[in-house]
Image 1 (cartoon, rainbow, N blue to C red):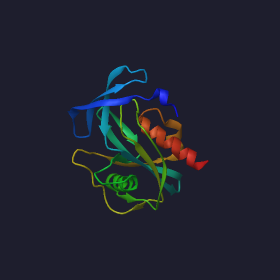
Image 2 (image 1 turned 135 degrees about the horizontal axis):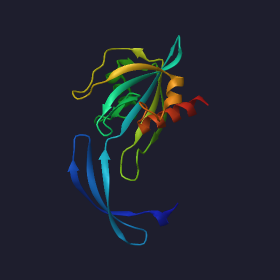
Image 3 (image 1 turned 90 degrees about the vertical axis):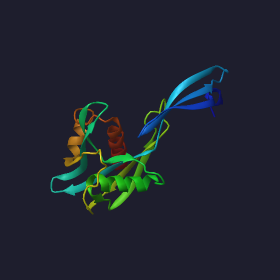
Image 4 (image 1 turned 60 degrees about the vertical axis):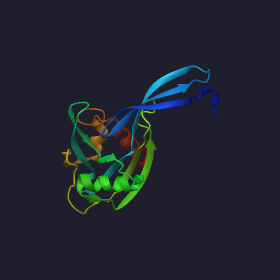
Length: 183
C-alpha cells in the first residue's frame, strides 16, 4: 500500500446544491500534516450503453444526438445518463437505453467502470455493451431532454472519434472498452 500518499479528510462543507450535482469544500490533511481545502463535485454514478446492431451494412451503433450546454455544441453519443435513486448500474443502463432509444438489450455486458475525473469528482461511470437490442417502445425523454437517434457504422465511429461530432471524452472511453472487448 502507498500509505505515504494518502490524505485524511478533516471536514466537508456543502457549498452548492444543484439539480445534477453538489459541490463540497473538503479540508484534508496531507501525509506531512499540512492542511488543504479542495473542491469536490458530488454526483450520482452514470451509465453509458453501447448498443450494437448487425445490419446489411455491417455492425452499426445506435447513437444519439444531444445538445451539450458546457461545450455549446451538438454531440453524437452512446445513450446514457445518471442513475436514479435505488438503481444499480445494470438497471440504470437498461432504463437509459429504453428512455433514449426505445430499445432493450438482447444481452447486456458490463465492459468496465471509471472515475470520470477523480481529481474533482466523486462518482463513477459504468460502461455496458448492449448486443442485439430490440425495439420495445418509444423514447421517453426527460422534460429538458431533446434527442435524435442515428445508426452509425462502427468503422465511422472508430475513424472519427475525437473529432466533431464525436467530442464527448466518455464516448472515447466507451469505444476503447468496446474495442478491448472485441480482442
